[in-house]
Length: 549
Ligand code: G6Q
Image (cartoon, rainbow, N blue to C red; front, side, top):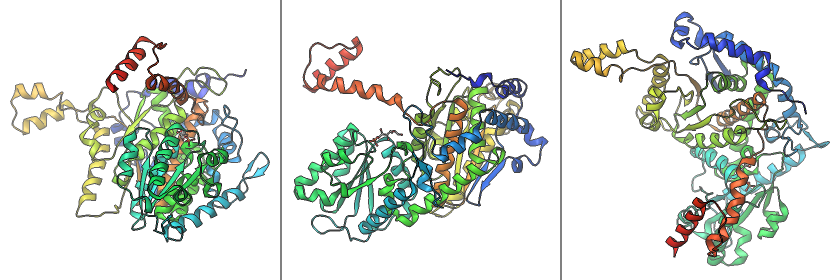
């Protein structure tokens, strides 16, 4: 079997030796030496999205060497290969074509010799008609009432996308329509949502690519019973639709295939918000806005395919991530949107990044000998400034951050937004510049501290600085810029997967626990005495059974 370790590539070795010389370089010195640094290290997509990556521990040479690595990994060919519909998901023998869903020029996209665009267009037409019928009350509930509560039942990729996007676009929701999401198998998730709803005005969208996922089917059955108990079994036809690739299972569950919206196995779960999985979003914000989101993603797709690597936003962000992860040894990474509407973005990106690239075996079946996906975490600014930012500023290891900021808020109340913006700009500068012990001592002196106090406190009050951040600036969070932003991250994750030589499109790692849960379930329910697990699991099962008696 052909094996290439990226670590043996010439460009990788050059980066290793570059890092040895470069690691002591301070960003603040790079800024001081080059007045044009920010301009040189900023890229944009139309006027919709700007990325300032100047506050990174990189020089022009670093960037050149990183792009050499990308070229040596044949990135340009791999990009073509994905968009062309090659079966790059090699473990599942599937094409990876979420990009076909936002192929707004409708160019043919071939899978197994067949153009998939006519089917995609037909499903979008059905989605448009249905979403409009619900929005304008032409598709009513069983008792003739307008459906105003939209409940998406799904998990993982069939939940996180709709949750994140619908929240991000909340300002665009039609008045009177509300979206709810049930994902967790924990009965509380279901109970808390159902408690708020009136069956007569509720539409359940069962979102499951496979239609075999235990959490989703269990939640859907509970909701179905709740509805049928209130309105009778025939009401199900008017209150349940399915989003799936599996028509047989949808029928088996008792949803008429006419009420099913289809997608295809070339759309991975965590990349599926562009498909009918976005139905709840389309109902809330309207299909026109949903299509604007596709337009934004398409603009990023074109940028990604057409721009040279050096000025290609996803490529640049990805390669800087590789620099930190594989050369600087920084294996954590934070995404901090300074916008309340983007509060679910970190959770969404966690799945996109860590499920895609949290792998240890490369495409040849060999164990990798380098770090793959970093741990991604985050939260909305300024809340997180008052929680984990302590570690980001003074922890033992730098955590590269992405700060995402809209210049204009949907809620320009007083000077809230300017205070928010001032905070994020200050964070980037503070992380980069830091504060020396001398500077800390001077401040302490000014505040009237004694010599002893100053000498004790100055180290606690100093900041190493040289901590990296990207600034991703949008004019406003609207459907177009949101589409571009999500696609930017998708492609970034793709590029890193290429460098690490892994399959970014499977998720075998989530299977083992699921299988074992199926074995444990009857043991919890039926008091099985002959438990064959490790002593800890056996003990936990016994304790839980005792507590539940
Ligand atoms: C995402 C994963 C996973 C998936 C869920 C739900 O890429 O495949 O998160 O979306 O396990 O699967 P179903 O949509 O099949 O219910």
